Length: 225
Image 1 (spheres, rainbow, N blue to C red):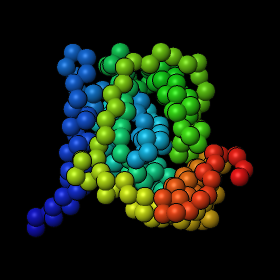
Image 2: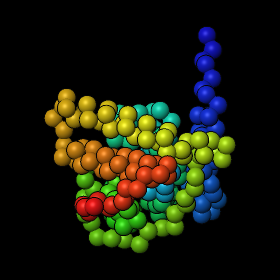
Image 3: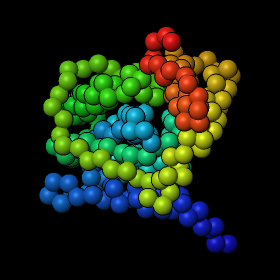
Image 4: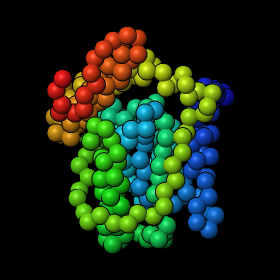
């Protein structure tokens, strides 16, 4: 029996992801083929929402997040792939050929991830991303050049960016994450992620309400009206 074709919108997004990962880097190498690297996902507002690292290849790691090959972040309802509109990657080409047990290589990878993490926290209007695991502090390092691109085709972008669609998705993600927390002995990091998701939902819902005539101040995390 032949396998059913995936929906056209999903196929179009996967094609854009492949195209992004095939972007030539130094010496013409495709950035997705870098074995070692760091990546960040951004939502439709340009907010950074997740930071990760890999030593198995950026292509494989990002693919598992975004093409339904489950990762812990997706399985635990921390990250909804639907929310990812842009990707930025920092390939660590100088670590190519290093074994994943190489302590110096792992040390540089961890330092690169922490440096990116600190950068995106400064970019975030929430001062937070959705990572449930703590990223261990290191010295900050000079990062290699990065590549950032939207992965949603123009034909789908406005529909997926619509706040009502995103509010519904975000509320569903929060409910699923809250259920996981209620049923398991989870880390403080997962509860922090739930709080961040709730703040993101409140911000989006307030913006949408104001668009249709509401008049509710939008405040930052920790601020009071």
